[in-house]
Length: 280
Image (tube, rainbow, N blue to C red; front, side):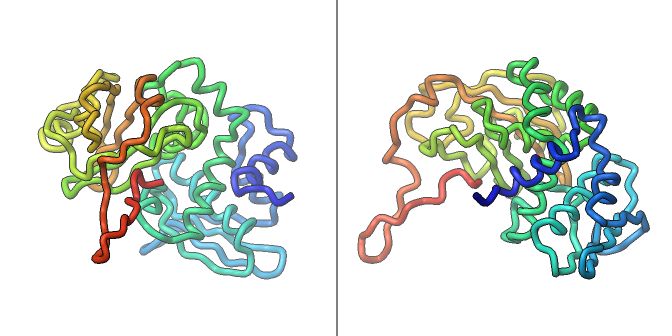
């Protein structure tokens, strides 16, 4: 049976006998895979991978943020394991950049890196003690795993243990959104920030949001019945004048039936064209 991308990364962690975040030495893992890691200043990209037969060199742009360097190495390891035979020049300093693109190989390498640096067997217990973690608590997890807050928050959604949506907005609107797999697809995020959201206050007025606060779901969702529900919201400033948003859905939202009234489009022949819904 063919393993998924995340499963391949986590199988590698298990094969190496790694049992704690401190043991995830990404340079040593690269060495074991016959990938030499070289740190050198670069312009135009954050990392490159050049391979020949069973050996490769990953060049990484040095950063003051260790989490960024580690993600770059893990990302190039993803290319080596998944896309061998190709050379890559990657901008992997911000994994969210690839979410708003259609670069298949870059997204796959990000998935590999995320599972390699934050394997489910270690990451799951680290977040479970917090219940519904805030950004402050996720920062503690990020420090433990030596990952960026962006990568850690994305992993929170992908591990699918909480009813959470992670989204990124700028003044133009939604750049991307990642819901946990069990979030009902009937919920459609607004394309533009609502003036009543804490994210709007942060983006336009610089007003920080220090914790998770209850918010009417209609502030965030297009659905006509959203005013019947509540979410919990927190946001922080992120790359390139964007805000990173945590949205936890309350239990009744997970049980709501399908909503036929939102995001319905028709072609010139009157046939229904399904909407894209929440970007994954």
